[in-house]
Image (cartoon, rainbow, N blue to C red; front, side):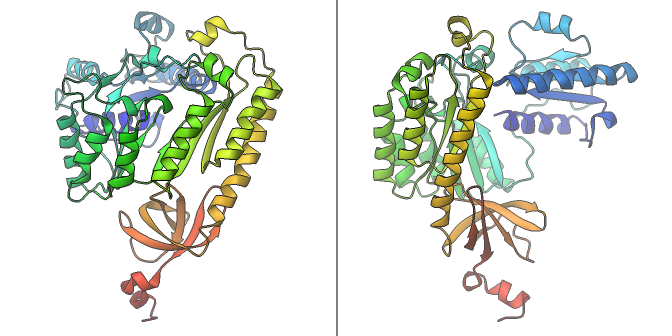
Length: 424
């Protein structure tokens, strides 16, 4: 979501006459888009603000703007605490940014922010803001507010513009994307939006995230199964594999309900890949409860597991009601155990693709190799002399690891490559 918002802000600033520069020290305007989901992220924000304070002393004409989840309702307090910042605006509150730019009497100010600048074939489109769930560990609802969905036709119009601009894949974003549309008069669901976008000419792939298990319904699973442009991949955070911990987290489902949801998705979409999120060391988590989580991961065999150690976020329910009583070294050990388990599981899953052709949407080039992702969200690298950016190519996998796949363009599918290499 932050990446999508940064692209949108950059696009607006481009339209007003600003030009992007490579470093802080070259800039006359710096916009810091922040994340504070974890303490380490907030620490990084504070460190950057300290760096910018020194820079501001050197260059009085420098303007510093801050947005993102660091900006809460107490903007007056933030202004006093960080006098080096010229303007704070709430995440997604583009009208506030436009108002500040207009106040600077900048040529081109006042334009709308309908479309972001994007240089990749993959575009990010926020379809809603906020979250109504109030999981006990999460700061997001306090920083981004309650759920607000964008009108369906507005989203369709934006995607049409992005596709005309060269986007081949669109990822629909929301803090809880499964509840899209419940607050709109017509109450369209995410499955309805996917169906509308699926018929769009020029669009090759659709993705969406992040899901909440309690809000995922059979209609959405059916949409993933039946709509040809919707990729066979779901991000489905479980957070814990113990019912008492899930209850303390206020997740709204049980392990048994989550397990059945995974089975339902796999029954309807046999080739689906699944990724999940896990928090270890939640207050009061016993060794037995951690082992329940570890056992669930071993049973479910996810393609990807994002694991984090619990850290208290001031203002959340867990911060108010629970003591952070799990030692840091215990959290590190539990996180390491999950990472080791998942490396073995992912390695096994990916090894099954060795020798197989996979369709890859090429996103860019890194260290002399093209890279992109399969429909199941596997990162794939390959070499080729031809410019493949934005193309859908078939790559035969030759080497696998838990984190990425390596392969070669399938010559049988690309006669032009055979001609280039003199093998036709």
